[in-house]
Image (cartoon, rainbow, N blue to C red; front, side, top):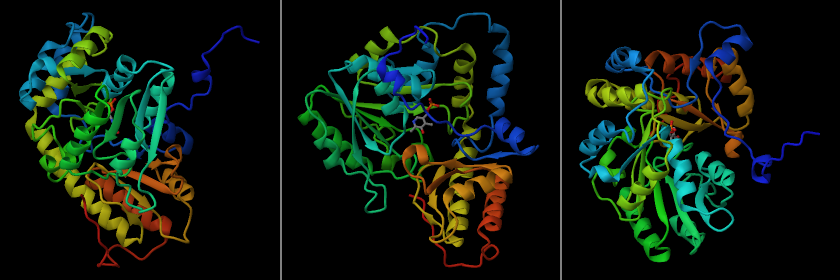
Length: 389
Ligand SMILES: *Cc1c(COP(=O)(O)O)cnc(C)c1O
C-alpha cells in the first residue's frame, strides 16, 4: 500500500476527456493521413504572421516573460475599447476559469452554478477546489439545448460565487441573444450581489452577427459580469495556450495578484500579438467557418441526421433514428482516418460533435458519413434544411 494520501475530491475525480489526437489514430489504425475535427481548432492552420513571430522570438526562449504581459494587455484593451485595468491573460482560458474559482469560491463553503451538460472544465476545476457544483439541466426535453435562466437562478443563493454560461454553448452551438444575458446579469446582481456571472465567449466571433449575441462586442458590460475569450479557436493558437478575460476592475486586480507569474510564455505572447495584427487571416477564418458550417449542416441534414443550429465552429448532431448507434459511426469514421467527438463524457452518448474543417476536410467527412450510413449519394434530398444561428 502506498503511503501517499490524496484528497478525496481528487480520488473521486473524473478528469477532463480531450479529443483523440492525430498521432494516436495514425498509430492505432496504421494510417498516414488523419483528419481531426474533434477539438474545434482553426480549419486554416496557423497564420503566416504568427509563424514568422514565433521564428523571430524563438531565440529569446531562455528569457523569462515580462510580468503581467503588458503589451498583450494593451493590445486587447484597444481591441475591445476597454480600460487596461480590466484585462487579464492566462495559459488558455482554462487557467482563467480555474483561477476565478480559486479566487472567489471558498472550499466547503461556497458554490458554483452551471448548466448540465456544459463545458466540463467548470465543474471539474470546481471539484478539484473542493467547491460545490450546482447544475441546471439544459432544455433537452424541448430538444433545443436552450438555456432556462429562471431555473439557473433558482440554484443561486447567498453562498454562490460564480455562475458560468457559455455563449455559444459547447457542445450544442446554441447561443442566447445578448439581451437575455443582460437580463440574467441584472437579476443575478439583485439575487446575489457577491456573485459573478462568467460569460464564456470562446466561440462568439463565429456567429453570423457577433454583436447580436455578445455584450462584450456591443460594449455593454454589466458590473457583475466576467467575459472570457480565447486565442485557441478563431486566432488559431490552441497549442500555445493563451486566453484572456475582461473582469470587473477589482476582480482583475485580484487575478494578477494570484496568477502564476509566468504562465503566459514568451512565444504565446508574441504569437498572440501577431495573431491580433493578422486581420486578413482572421477574416479568412471567419468566412471559412461560416461557409463550412452551412456545408456540413446541409450535408448532414441530407443524410437525415438531426443537426442543431449553431453559432460556433462545430455542429452537434444525431444519426437517423433506427440506424447505427453513434459509437459505431464514430469508430467507422476513425477507421477511415477521421476523428470527431463522442459526447458520452457530457452524458450525451447518442450525440456527436463535429468541428467545421476546411473545404477538403468537410468534403471528406461528408463522403465518409455517406459511406457509413449507406444513404443515397450527395444532394439526393434537396429539401434538407440547416440554419446556423
Ligand atoms: C475551447 C474552449 C475554451 C478555450 O479554452 P483554452 O483554454 O483557451 O484553450 C473555453 N471555453 C470553452 C467553452 C471552450 O470550448
